Amino acid sequence: MKAKEKKLKIIMICVFFCAHTNTKAQLFGGTFNEIFEGLSKSHSQSFKERSSFVLSPEFIFQNQEINFVNLSVGYQYDLEKEESCLSVVKNSLIAKVGVDLGYKKNIFYTAPRFTFQGNYSSLLMRVSCSGLSDLKNTDLRISPEAGATYCHFVYIVYGYDFNIGKTHFGNFGKHKITFGINFTVKRFKKQKQVPET
Image (cartoon, rainbow, N blue to C red; front, top):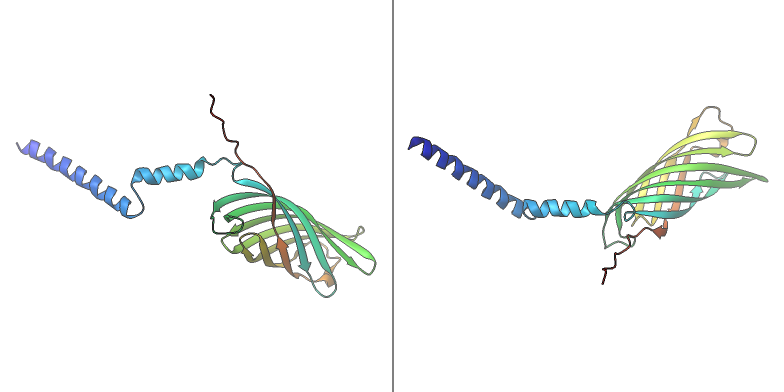
């Protein structure tokens, strides 16, 4: 009898634990099954459904000596979306390539640039690698930047240029402020399967 009573107690404890755990899950947004279903739905979106091409024109205020304009194209991957925003994107990662163009005293300056950018809500952080050149000399630069964005559509960032190696354009300054816009030029969409008749 004692052995049966022990087994019955163990079964009752297990049932109570499962019921108690399930109740807690319901209080925090649903049963375990509902939670796992929501996670599987969010991850069931394919890579293409979350990806898009972006076109980004920028104005870069360097100092009174020279300013630059930039045109970049890139690839955006959406980590999270919200329908209440203009671009319906909440968090995303963007990789872009482009070129900075500047003009001073009859000399054109170019700077091919690669940028990796992360957007979290209204915050923006990125790192840029560029090569500033007047077609005779070249300065290699790494620029960490941070700023704010509205719906990942318009943004403003502050950056600081770290030179790698010899500096030829030190009078251009190291501090810069960038204004930019992200245009989504193509978004991949999963083709809907037409049911066979």
